[in-house]
Image 1 (tube, one colour):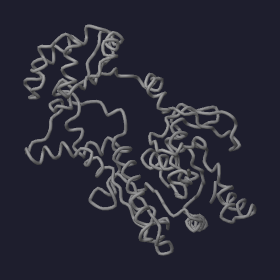
Image 2 (image 1 turned 90 degrees about the vertical axis):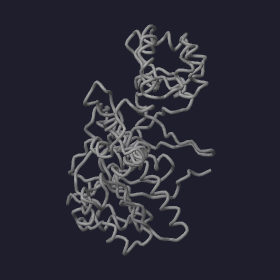
Image 3 (image 1 turned 180 degrees about the vertical axis):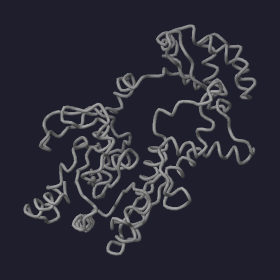
Image 4 (image 1 turned 30 degrees about the horizontal axis):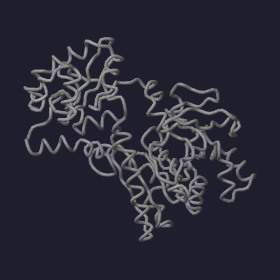
Length: 402
């Protein structure tokens, strides 16, 4: 059985995290992705340590696995011609992450390209979208979460300024995931109507959507949620607790059967009925007792207590512990991905990476290679659309192609 997205051809003009993460997901599912890279514009992910023996950043290697690289100076008419030739060759899905208007100024905007390619699916992923007063404003994950209201009820009461979240929720959750959904929706519609589409994904819009439960509460009550007051944000027993050895335990025993089992395991059956009243005052009335009890044993001791009890209690793991966890291994969530050597060939080495979490019957993800150096496939790609060796040499000498 062929890969689910075999036949989809994507030109990826994006950089940093959100766009590349989205196209990585699509490549894992069989889409053919060419990464268009600016020869002289620094790409931060390439500089992020650790760097392997081939000079490739582990971050860049992960985000750009299975994607071929074409170095292209889009300020040249010859480069625009190459882009159009690739679209004619079937690469009729574009993902870009520039500020609104940039791609148009370069001559590869949606309105320009759709005249020749009406079936083009053109996906723009930005911080604030293609319209609105903030459309030209710079931003990062933290800013989108801040303006979405999400950070307004995050953190602890005794800390006015909580730490940033440990993962890029707006970039990946609100940006990458929604881009993939929108892109595939446009592909399905194109299969029926033959029409392309302009896709406008805003990470701020997505962050608002991810905060929709809190916003629904605000709309009805006219009050905004406060940090550590909600049932799922620390205002109830649903929380993280320190153990005797300074580690942490997550307690998520919300349903009555889980809460009953948890209370029995810690020797506090008296809390079974009390704990089902989720009012803030009631929960805080016994929460200090829970903190004291859970701090009386080490993490290993509590793991032993809860190992055979199904009550939604788990250890808080480090990243190293998580990748070595038996369940992670059993689910094949870590894979060895081949690494290209300095000459752009498979050299026998590999890099351990997180696998695609999407599991479909009849499909095994194929990880061709980890992310490569700039222009590793330029010659190969240009030859595939009819450029001769002499023409490629000239383009490189003129610094149009890298």
